[in-house]
Image (cartoon, rainbow, N blue to C red; front, side, top):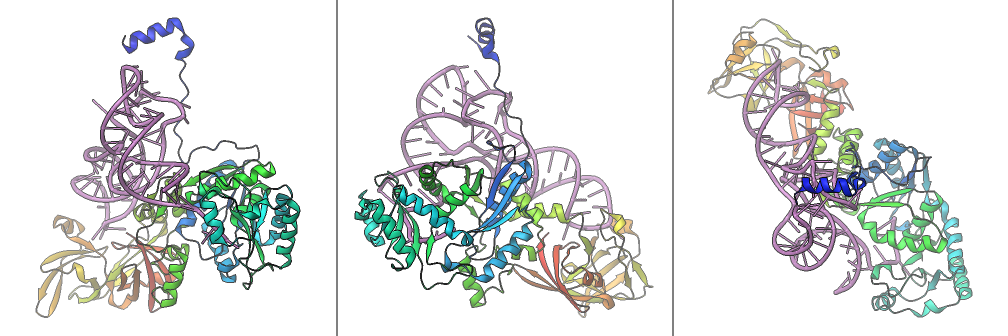
Amino acid sequence: MDPDERRTRLELLAPELLEKKEKKKRETGLRALDNVGEEGVVMRFAPNPSGPLHLGHSRAAYLNDYYIRKYGGKYIIRIEDTDPKRITEENYQMLLSDVDWLGIEVSDIVYQSDRMDIYYSYCEQLIAMGGAYLCRCDPETFRDLKNNKKECPCRDQTIEENLSLWKDMLAGIYHEGQITVRLKTDISHPDPAMRDFSIFRIVENTSHPRCDAHVYPLMNFSVAVDDHLLGMTHVIRGKDHIANTRRQKYIYDYFGWEQPTYFHYGRMSIGDIVLSTSAMKAGIASGEYSGWDDIHLGTLKAIARRGFSPEALRNAMIDIGIGQTDINFSWENLYAANKAIVDPIANRYFFVPDPVLCHIPDVSEHIAHPLKNPNDEAKGTRSLTFTGDIYLPRDELEDDRMLRLKDLFNVRVKKTDDGFFLEYSGDSLDVARAEHAQIVQWLPKDMAVRCMLHTPEGIIEGVCEPGVCGETDAVVQFERVGFARIDSASETEVSAYFAHK
RNA sequence: GCUGAUAUAGUGUAGUCCGGCCAAUCAUGUCGGCCUCUCACGCCGACGACUGGGGUUCGAAUCCCCAUAUCAGCACCA
């Protein structure tokens, strides 16, 4: 029976089966969320202050932000500073300024170090209900037992014994490494990662910038407690947390809480860019990198310095989405996203790389008026006065060739033993077009400002228009070269950072 | 070793849950053309992918199995 025939038969037998399931309409942006309440969603961005934020962090930050903007609700920045060994005062400041730069919709900032008493109290409850025990095995012994699905002796302690040991632990009777609190899960769970993992530890001789403690919760505990108490409805995090989601389920179950909806996005590798905090720190110490904003790094500070707009980064990250597939972050895609934002607003200027001073004889004074932005004439023009001597990019000087000096006039280049000889060749653009003359940027000798263009491959020395000096912090387009952020400028020298073409 | 996950063009992504409207979406990229006093922007066109093998089915990117590859976890880090 062919499909048409079958359809006809079905129509007679059971017309209701012909009702098609509604396919979801194609939406732009990320997939819709389930379980959205009337108040919207409550989500979080939870960095730990061990270094500056980088491109990897921006993915989590923007994915969460996307949904908070879409559904309303709350966006909590939760600073996970429960490991005193790798946090510093400076890191908090960097983190906050980075969060600020991202431009996300922050409702609240919560420090876990302010919540130690909460963790202690929930831990005590957990022990009291028999959900956790104090373990005095050394880590290696425990690991061997665990790997063989064997309980350690501490697991049999009574609740009273555990509560008493917990008090001793808090009182400072035990030292680092001597005792830990373990969650009682399932010692013969097929996944070794699930078996009786630690939830509290002792850290001594390391002062915390924000609290005075020696007993610290491990992330699975503090995260579970906070996600619940802060009312998270949805959690987006990397897939390195897949096992943690399952581990935290045990804590939720003990307390009778309901877990939020989780999404785990995949690994993102970013070309040859350095992202690891320790590697960056080492590179800075050795002088290989100039600082956290060195343009060879993948920090937000570095990409901000190069003139990427947070909005472009946001768009690039939303485009990547929350898939679990491992991906290669592509600079090309970020370049395109940034260009879309920056092109309409960036003022145009001439930058002459590797400049060659040329004299053009027998021409009267000309003044060129190139547009500041050809897509927005209202922005006006700059003006460049030609009086005989100009700089031209060395790369454009070839033997016997006509060049169109942009917005000025045509010249013919001749190479002699004494260098390049330039000859005025009329004002007509049509003539230049007819000759397929290359249109090039140029600068009057008297108006050229020294300009260092920093690129990841090195510094390009050149000269630029004086107008650039008023563009500090802005992104401009050096015509025929690309977009760059003006990092600093005096009347005699400009420092610019290259973003992309 | 154990546990769990993922696999669509150069890159990213939609479609996979609930098989047919998918000879597979969109963006980026590359190439060609148009526009233009920038190699920018804009416009037009072309290129380019369902990891492999079995199975189920009238029909598979979609469901099942196997293989392969990659990733994550198995810390008193997060």
